[in-house]
Structure formats: structure tokens, C-alpha cells
Image (cartoon, rainbow, N blue to C red; front, side):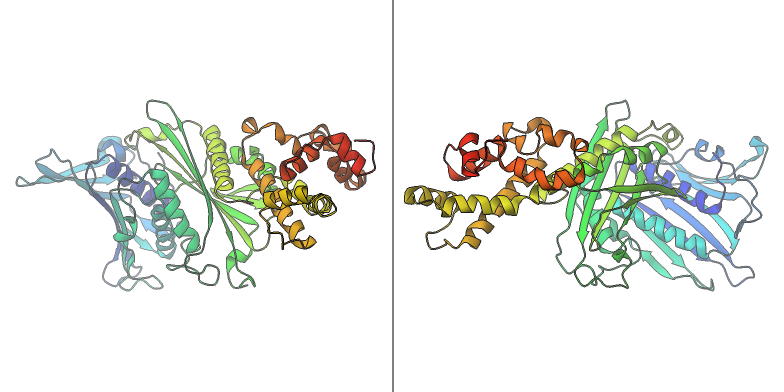
Length: 504
């Protein structure tokens, strides 16, 4: 495996440490520490990645190759210092590894080991020293480790410490404390951890702020959240998790807040509990989703240096969509084997659709399909029609039954009150029907599915606008809807006579 920069190497070392922690049965700690040496020109910074998981194997490092990159801001001699021990070892082992050494037999140098004096513990520390400009490295690690907190890994505490010394422009202290990682109980499921961590991430606008953004979110604000999990039953149990969050910004929108530009969604992608570039198969899967069935129009999907962005055409200015994906193996494998992950496009599509369906189910009126939105636009006219039927009747018993069905009192006979009540019930029925999977819809779904709606391209826009509602109003589906509200058997023919027509 070729690591083309110090930044990529650090990401790989953190990834390996995560897997060792996952393989441990005990509580673990993962620490990333940057410490500057006494003043020098250029400054020298020691980078350490330490974990208390199972001990490491030399094979994890012998496969690494580091090409010379004279254009890099960070200068590194290719030397890694490795300290490791397993729970069953009686010694702590020390090694030096030179990743720039071409001769494989000379890449590893074993140093004298130290006795554990009967103590039982395990862990690994890998360190290296770099010189030159490290501001970009510090920013990358802050972002990288910060995103790991989204997952809220059970049994693992993660911290990032930077002792800046005289490193110009860098930050000092414990930037990411370990206790931020243990917010849920260890009995919570992985998707519950992901959902909770992603909500915190959205509240903080990613890693840009440590605290909630009060210009967009007030305390206790409600987000519309949906989650989905799908598993491929293999020997390793490949799992894909997805969480979708829709947040609405308060008006007026604060122009200083970057979320005001909400037409783009950055897709956060994790693989085996570590941030990484999105896979090509997952990117293609996002393109293939029928977003229109959720009321969204996708303009484009772009991949910018491994970061995926979805751009929407019809997203309101006060709304924002966030999406996170996490692909992992239920059975933990050593880092070398992790490179053999199967294509996860199918899992991605299914998990995202489950998350979208979950969000719709939990939030009335959210993610209505384009078709449902069109039907909702006719609700006011239909409500006026039904209200007119009720209020124009001279049958007091009939009117009483109608008011009873609508939950209205006899004194609530103002036309506007009756219309508003009926309109709310119509829209509620449409929303409920739109949330149901197609295979679960009852015969009444003809309100949404008839021959006319199946082939909208057969009608031009002008004819559609003029004729659609009149055809719908005279249809048997409309008669069935009115019947359900009025509690009376009103047939399509009788209804057509009321409108002075001869039927559809």
C-alpha cells in the first residue's frame, strides 16, 4: 500500500488503531498527539498515534510504501518508531521501520524489548517526526478526528492533543477531549450512536464550531431525522448504515451562516469506523435513487477530492439536507484484510431509501413525492366543494352526522371553519398514503394512481392545468373520498349530477 503523503499516512495509522480497538474486548483509548520539539528552523513536530487495543503485527507496516515527494510541505525521513504488546505477551517490543528503504529485509530493525514484570495489558504506539509547515496537517487531523466523533464508537474514547510550543499559527491543548466520545451507553446499537453523533454534528455545523450554532438552532430544536440499516449476509457481515437529517433555518436567515446556502449536501462517508473517500459504487448508487418520489430534484452529484456533494434544484432557501453513510464489517478483521471490501452500491441505495422512508414515517408532510404535492394543491378546491355539499343540505340529520365526523360543534358552522377542517383532513390522508410503501396501499390509493396520472407525458401542460382537477373531481376516487368524510354512499353518477355533468 502506497501512502503518498504524511497526511495519508496519519489517516492510515488512525484507521489501523481503530480496528485494533474494535478487536479488543475491553474499554480502549485512542490518542493522537502532536508535540513540537525545542525551537528549531524549520520546526520539528513529533506525531504519535497510540491505542490500547490488541497488539499490532509487523505485517501491518511492512506493506506500506512511502515515495519521495519533494513538493510536500512536510519533510519526513520515512522512519517509524513502533512500540507494541499483546495481552498474552510478557514483553513490550520496540521496532524502527524505514518506509523509504527499498530492500525489504532492511526495512525493519528490532530494538531491545522490555519486560512487563507480570502486568497484563496491550496496546500500540506509532510515532514519526516531520519538519516544515505542519499547519495543514494540524487542520486535517482536527477535521479527521473530529468527524470520528460522529460515530460515537462504543468502548472507545478518542482524543486529539496538540502541544504547539513555538509552531506558528497552530492551536494548543486538548482540541478533542476523550469524554466527548462516550455519550451513549455501550448497549446502544451502532445506528443509534451514528444518529446521535450526526445530530450533534449538524447542530455544530460540522467541525467548524464546538458549540451549537445559535444563529440557526435554538435549544431543543427539532430536526427531522431518518435512519436505515441493511446487511449483506457474508462471512464478515458487511453492513451499511445511513442517516438523513432535514433542518429548517429560522427566518430571517443569518447571512453570516454558511448553511444559508443550502442547495448542496456534503455526503459524509465512513468505512469501518473511519472517515474516508466515498466509493465509486456508492456515488453511482446515490445518482440512481428516485429522489423525485421523495419530493427532491437532484441537479448533480460531484466528487471533489473524495468528498461527495449532492446539489438540489428545488430545496427551499430555509432548508438543508445532511447525509452520512457508514459501511463496516460486523466481524472485525485485521487492517490488511480490510482492503478486500466488496462493492457497496446496492447496500448504499437500500440504506438511503430506508432512511428516507423512516424520516417520512416519523414526520408528517416531510419528503412528499412530487405527485402527492400536486394532489395537495387541489385540496383547497376539493374542501370547498365538500363544505358546499354539507352546508347547502337541508337535511339536519345529514349535516349533524357530517359535523360529528369532522369533529365540529354545531356552533362551528362558518364556511371557512368547515373548509379548513376538511382541507386538513384531506392533506393528512394524502400524506399518510404517500408514506405507505406501494405494495401496502389499499384500493383507495386510486386517489393517487389512475390512468391519467400514469402517463402525464400524454397531456401537455396547458391541458393538464385546465382539465386535471375537473376530471379528478368527477372520478370515482373522489366520490369514495367524499363518501368517507360524509359517511354516506354517494355514487359517482349521483355526484356527477350534482356537478351538472354526465360523468368523467
